[in-house]
Amino acid sequence: MSDERPPLVIGGGVAGLVTALALAPRPVRLVVRGRLGGDGSTLWAQGGIAAAVGEGDDPARHAEDTLRAGAGLCDEEVVRLVTESGPEAIARLAAWGVPFDRTPAGPWALGLEGGHSRRRIVHAHGDGTGRAILVALTERARRTPSILCDEETRVVELARDEGGIAGVHVVRADGTQEFLPARRVVLATGGIGGLFPATTNPPSALGDGLVLAARLGARLRDLEFVQYHPTALDVGGRPLPLISEAVRGAGALLVDEEGRRFLAGRGREELEPRDVVARAIWTCRREGRRTFLDARRAPGEDFPRLFPWIHETCLRHGLDPRRDLLPVVPAAHYHMGGVAVDHSGRSDVPGLWAVGEVAASGLHGANRLASNSLLEAVVFGLRVAEDLARDPIRPPPPARVAAPVVNDEKEELERLLPIVGQTLGVERDAVGLRRGWEAVHALGPKSVASRAATLVLLMIASAYRRRESRGAHIRTDHPAPAATRGRSSFVTLDLLARGLEEGEPACVA
Ligand SMILES: Cc1cc2nc3c(=O)[nH]c(=O)nc-3n(C[C@H](O)[C@H](O)[C@H](O)COP(=O)(O)OP(=O)(O)OC[C@H]3O[C@@H](n4cnc5c(N)ncnc54)[C@H](O)[C@@H]3O)c2cc1C
Image (cartoon, rainbow, N blue to C red; front, side):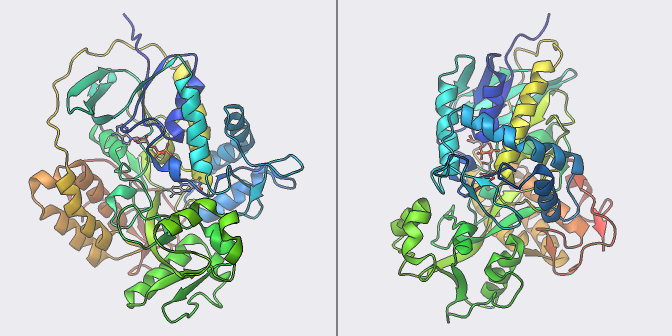
């Protein structure tokens, strides 16, 4: 007997949709927490997708820029394969109906973002790229008969037996619990920003995939690396709307409440890399000063034409970028860490793949180059689909597995948010990390066992063990990068039982 069941893809962002579409006409079952096309970070991506498609550009230059941003921690082979696959990824998305913007002469219109040495950001509907991608892929998936979709269905646990992965436990919209047997599961559950008090990510970005994989014994990689976006609109609530760095690229300035430009005279000033700008804003706010983006002079009256989505968002919050200062704050934006995967997106657990933001392929290293994440999701989505198609036939999974006890964990999350904000901010140090570790444990055993707390503890331990500053991980007590070449850090769930002080540090400066 062999397993005739289709693989399960968990998550309906760009990573899950590309994987499912590339598998067609092979059957696949897509399991999505919300409505298909209505949830996930993909919907909100503004800048675009990076690919060396412009005249005078080539994948080797794109690779160089990616390696520079990654601060010595990228996997060079992965960087090469992703940047070389960029043009093909754009062509594939366009063929699937993504309406990328073109110049009047015909070729793709290309934007420039921080860290890129060439104009190579392909976009759609200006700053509405993510939405345009999700709409096109969702429509195509709905028209593809080989894709079955379980919407409003949250995966709450994975099951494993001696044959590897055995299936997933889900909770439906009406609260009923069910076991879906499967020998092949792809996690495409997105990032972790929902665990942070200030974030640009949707509330569903709770790192579910990371915890589920870790509970099954998978290794997680580089969890300490969280990219903060320097300019989220500080209007309260979660998530915070994002003001793309393209607005600074168009001339907007960062000022404090007295109108002082706190980045004036520093390197490329407002266009310094994200971590430098985020840290400057963080420092101002720690000193009790308020921070604003001033777009009144530039882009000024051009704002609505250049940034229609952002303009509309500001107006919704009672702010007109042409007349008002825009209050901004750094917010958790992208997780470089994730489930450790190989070049085909396979984790260490037989039958378990991970793709998109939930995965750590080695592309981003210690810091993601702007607009490389959508590209990674597409390239690895195509690779995972190819690998699934080649995967040998496996024995059938068990039809039933004992159901786990599932709590909704809303309360646990609420109690964790302030701890995460204080512990895993733009700047970290050993004292704060130890305090955060203890504060999570003080919430009591039920809270500590929650999915969110499990991930937060693993992140704190990873940040504690990396005794250096590198890329997006800034330790005020170890302000320099370690002299040795960067090394990725790998953790498994057993680290939690061993405690904060145990085990080899990831790096010693
Ligand atoms: C505001 C913003 C702007 C951005 N701008 C850019 C940009 O310009 N360029 C760029 O390259 N990147 C950008 N990014 C990052 C990029 O959007 C994400 O990294 C990328 O979209 C992630 O895609 P994904 O498919 O991995 O995850 P997502 O798009 O987040 O999708 C995750 C999916 O998993 C589902 N899910 C989660 N948990 C479960 C569960 N337990 N059970 C079932 N389903 C689950 C969710 O419902 C969702 O469908 C931006 C991010 C944000 C937040």
